[in-house]
Length: 370
Ligand SMILES: Nc1ncnc2c1ncn2[C@@H]1O[C@H](COP(=O)(O)OP(=O)(O)O)[C@@H](O)[C@H]1O
Ligand SMILES: [Mg+2]
Image (tube, rainbow, N blue to C red; front, side):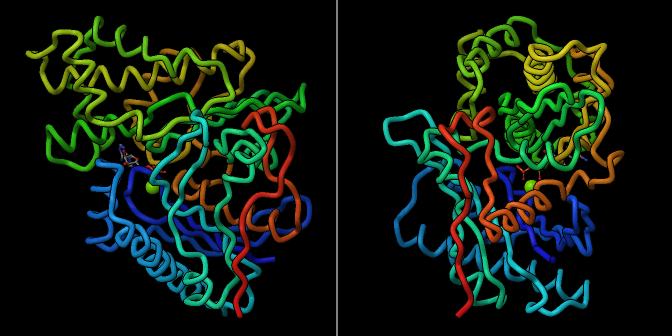
């Protein structure tokens, strides 16, 4: 059974897509994979939207169609690479582009843009999207969703921690002694680091963490940042770029009187913020000596310096999911291919222990080809 998964996260670095074959007992084979940059104007418009969090309704509607067109190009390339016809694919699981995630207010919602109708029409393949809101309808956070996938595909007879380092960081604790999976967003992973280096160094991201190695931690600033209320909230919890944006950093600097701090020192402090919040979250649930390892995925898994700091803070060996046979860039896309399969088979795809929903739910809306 072949499924396609498409993921584009809040880092806005592009579209990750995979074509997978799922066999019996969760046997997984990745037949083709692709990382496609966003079409340039689309990327700029999404970046502007994720800075201002506001837009005209016309722009909003158009963005859904433009995303569907760009996602369809990724699908086309995947099918070409694998020499497979659309009719051979059961469905596409498309996460869509998160532009607002708001689980805490009176009317909680999470908004992922994509016109599923257009994506189905362009590809000739049934599409599943809108994966988060049924969980929210049942009182859940709608995030993170991948812990269920981690549980099915990455569990072993020793305790493992899966750590996704995208714009936001999320952890999954896989303890073989309990069926209760713990997983939640710990806070920022790359989002603050990216925004800072884009603003101060004119680069998209801090490649391998090299710029950060040149700075020193500013202890008072770190302490102040760690007091942010999200870090002290109990799980289930989830967050997004609406909270952790450039203004957040500027407010912290101002409150700590850090007008003279060097750009490198602030960057180093932001790396430590991610390392420490991730490590504290993990160590609240496991004894380091009992853990086989932390398995990192997402783009942050390339940031060697960040991984070293997580290992130092947690006293747990940090590896990547590559060692478990899953490409760090593709894990989330593979998860959404599998979520599409769950939807088509009408099987639940959330855990109450992770999202806080009142029950298990079938996730995703299905757009069928005419
Ligand atoms: N070589 C690298 N060194 C440091 N950071 C990297 C590297 N490659 C990717 N990244 C980081 O990973 C981010 C993309 O990660 P990704 O998992 O795709 O996040 P998202 O799900 O938000 O799109 C980039 O914005 C960047 O911060
Ligand atoms: Mg990405």
